[in-house]
Length: 259
Ligand SMILES: NC(=O)c1ccc[n+]([C@@H]2O[C@H](COP(=O)([O-])OP(=O)(O)OC[C@H]3O[C@@H](n4cnc5c(N)ncnc54)[C@H](OP(=O)(O)O)[C@@H]3O)[C@@H](O)[C@H]2O)c1
Image (cartoon, rainbow, N blue to C red; front, top):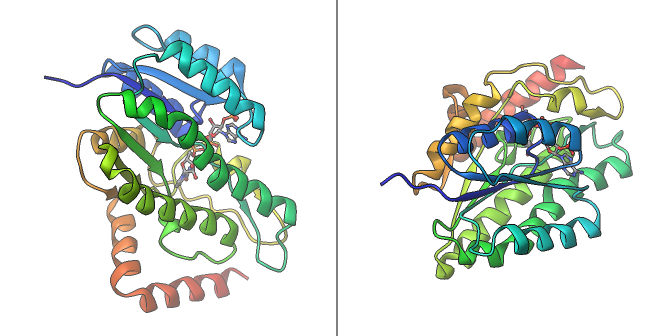
């Protein structure tokens, strides 16, 4: 039998989150999304197939958002949620001598603290659900330290730490934690990236948000722990695990050339 249920996605107003909402709704899931952009979320809700979809508006860096989230889940999901996808994320880049304190705070607030708060708030509902899955949208930079992107890299390393610890912690509750590590996806993410100092933005997109949504959907149907979509990406992940010195010398050479 094909499994459906309720999926809750952080950052569903655009990019990968929007494609995830479309993919899961197409498969028959009821979709809940979060974001700050009400206009985009309203438009998405109207275009999704199926019924009962909902959004929760608010800034994930603010305390009141989590009260609203809890109240909405109590009202909309009395029988629980099945899959929780921690997708919302931001990027500020800059070398360590250039990146501003405010940029560091924002990246760590949204990519780390907000992920934990979102998960904490949704957890009682996830425990009541049937499928019991948490999928964390990390990045290939969560397993390799990319020069000029240390704040973002650090935030995704932290997410990897959460993922691994939660997988062990929540196992006794029957909750499976999974991780995806994309690289270079064609969304507004790069346009929205703030640069402190002289580090150039990366403009290489190798996957579309629809392709990443499909990978995440497939991951949700499996019990594997992690996936790094794309051949090159999977190769980087392999290098990071087994031959980190080779990977690091490549990263250093490329950064030296970019200066
Ligand atoms: N694009 C890539 O190349 C790439 C590669 C690897 C990993 N990733 C990861 O994939 C995830 C999604 O990225 P994307 O490319 O889809 O980015 P995106 O197009 O910029 O979308 C980001 C989403 O996060 C939400 N968000 C950001 N800040 C928020 C805040 N303060 N409060 C509430 N919601 C907030 C945005 O909603 P609002 O604007 O409506 O608030 C939006 O829905 C991120 O975790 C990112 O690190 C992306």
